[in-house]
Image 1 (spheres, one colour):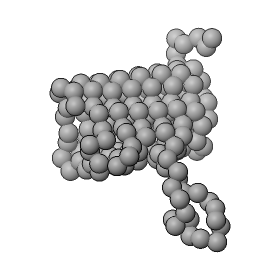
Image 2 (image 1 turned 30 degrees about the vertical axis):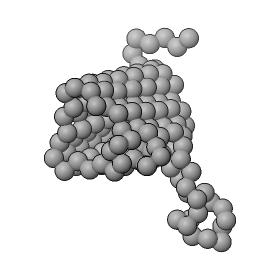
Image 3 (image 1 turned 90 degrees about the vertical axis):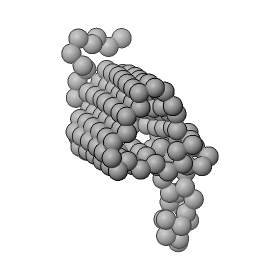
Image 4 (image 1 turned 180 degrees about the vertical axis):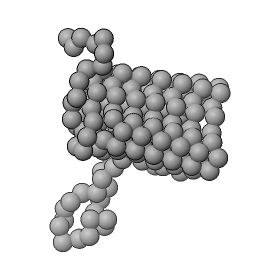
Length: 157
């Protein structure tokens, strides 16, 4: 754990031993960060996590200077659909890593689905559901999230 970690009231952790925190991380009130006994979650320096955020943090990496809006969620696992004759909840769980690169911003109430990467400096709009990787410096929004534009001042290569 880095220096300057600030944790709000009512924050919950599961498998805290699997987490690493950089310097000056903030975690807002009533956020819940669910690790896994065999997983890993790394949260970079100066990352801000809003109140009531939910992390399925079984294989999650947040870079430095990430903004995570209130109520935003990340899902890092999903149940297999097969066999179809069993309830979905009874099928095996597959862990898919999620990465949010340095300087990205995740909007209020957004949802990141398993296995995606949010590129450096990207912006995910409020309420978006991200089911595909997001390019660095891109702005995405909607359900499902779609490319809207490049951040002002960015010229794609």
